[in-house]
Amino acid sequence: MIEYKTPAFYRSAFALCLAAVVVFANLHLMQPLLPELSRQFALSPLAVSTSYTIGTLCLGLSLLVYASLSDAWGRKKLLLVTLLGMTASTFMLSQVESFSSLVFWRAVQGCCLGGLPAIAIAWMGEEYSKPALVTAVGYYISANSVGGISGRLLAGGLADLGHWQWVFFPMTVLGLLSCFCIWRFLPASHQFQAKPFRLAQALADNWYHLRQPLLLITYLIGGLNFLIFLNQYTYISFVLAATPFNLSSSLIGLLFITYLTGTVGSAYSSHIASRLSTPGAMALGVVVMLVGSLLTLLPGLISIIAGFFISAFGFFLCHSLASSWVSQHASRAKASASALYLVFYYLGASSGGLYLQPFWQWAAWSGVIVGSVLMYSVTLGLCFWLWRLQHLQLR
Image 1 (tube, rainbow, N blue to C red):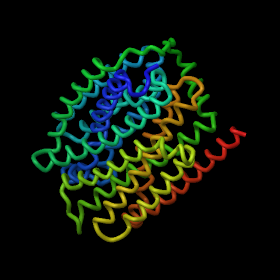
Image 2: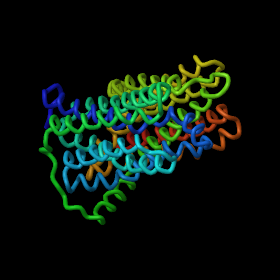
Image 3: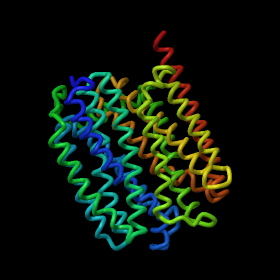
Image 4: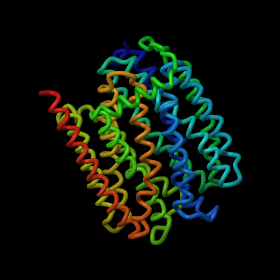
């Protein structure tokens, strides 16, 4: 096992975190470009958002395949293949000329982006000791948020300097760098034991996980939280691009700096959980998201920014704890268990636009917050249900 604060820990954590930054930068860089794409292709907000959500949808659907393949083929080898596919499809996105081509290559890219999320935490769960695992998952989730920030900032800035497609050139170079670091610094698995791929066994493992209340409730918490959190950024982009704000793509991209508090929330998640219990800390994260969402209803840009800073802290606190909870409580097929959590997570992200669209049509941003409060109330109830189940098992 790789112990915390050893050279092997720092090398492997660096490689995985760098890959996470690149993967999640690619995944989220379309979001601040949506108002610009809506104008360029003459599409509605819901229609143009498919160029973003198709990536999260394909990522989510690919996870179960990658988890089963990695159980049979090996973690590092499959991770390298998917990162190379991500890099190639990122370059192809720089060449598209129509919206349909954009959606197609985003779908291909989304399928390739699923490799790292499906494999990374499972690899950590097998190779790291428990103290190293909790810390590494916190670092990894923090890298996710850093990637989300950097991709959006880079996309918005390059769109204002020249063209929205320019962002895919530096992302291609970073993709190649991430492939090299995984190849060079991620050690071969020592605790991994390959299992022949059997579709029936893969389905049986997933069905087993879905019948475990401690896992299923966590899956729902992660998916429903991301359904709201991610798509709030989509709808607020259209608010900020319109009167009275009239912000450019680069300034809209700056809103995603609010993810930085998410980095803090992830890093301190284990410390908070040690005081409140993991379900209690997850519930605290949902309450923080509720407070942040309500704050955005106050007039002015400052209240919107402050609200998203607060929401990001709560979201990544809850997400980091949920991810490690699944890894710790899956009694078998850990890769499949982690992948199933992320399937719920990204299917939530992909369906959030559809859920919030009626609220948006009804009352614009105020309607989005009404829809958000309703869903966060559901996830808060799920956190308390998880807390109750945990205490019943400890008796």
